[in-house]
Length: 429
View (cartoon, rainbow, N blue to C red):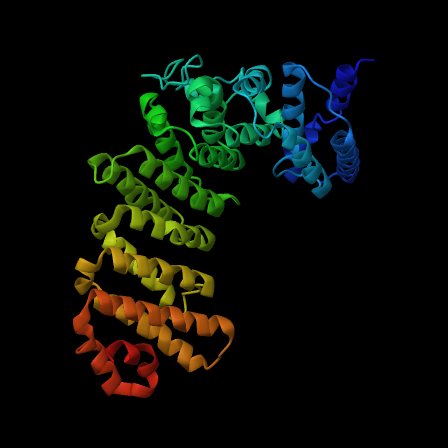
């Protein structure tokens, strides 16, 4: 048997067991044991491949090697620690791939996986956005039927490898092979697949030319799809989706719109006003993890929008103050309080010209939180850090509204210097 034939026979042993596609839902002990045995065999195969001499291989065989091994370069229940390490070692041989190799991987191995589910909004020959969805108004539903690509567990890792090794020139040449599978994952109805799609978009934004995104209309498709991710509010992946979608949306907007343009302003208003405030905060108000995730990424959106964020202060300030206010119905964790204070600091800085209207509301929340911490009397690390964060807000307020030193802060010191001195004394010195 020729070396290349033996190699391809070995690579077939790395074809991931179909059961891994539903691994999180498996409970049968025999099936789980069988998959563990498969994982051990795959780990041994990769270890052997890593030390095996690599003769000069034809392009088609190189593509097969990368396609199969890259399945183990990332995350997945089929990947052991040793397998992941050996996969990276093998792929080092292809760390600077030619365009021809990437094209072979994408056209011969990745494209056929998604062939049965063409994205209705894309021209499959060019990767351009279609003026109207192919297949009529129900095309999106047809697109979600018979999703055989989901049986190819690990394909996202191979796609990720291709994206990480693509330069701007490569994107121009292989756009029609790259964007359809990325959009297919991003627009899937299952949250885990959406997470895969966001991961791929994030990696793509590292090198993809902004002009290419705009010329092909894919920037608009991505923006719409990323905002849709914020409507998946009742699944275990919701917090991760919110964090990833907002960060990627902001990065995409900053990359594809001119600074100070109306287009950038409208896009950022869409993610902040409609996505976070009008979406997550209304429809997931009782989901503490989702709220915390949205507050974690709020600073990024506010900082990108800048002074334009003042139009949303009526929604932002009360939401950030609420976790600080002691009340029987308030079960906010210290982590949410930390996140709220971090976001509040950014809001005060970016919207400083309007803080005179909100200084009273913010100071009241800070004081209530401060007094509650003093009353508890504990001095653990978390409490001390929370006090420092509250001092930071007091400092930020003073920078935005200098008159507070002679009015509000001076009054607090007159009222109870021992209680409020540590919070505001240094700020009034």
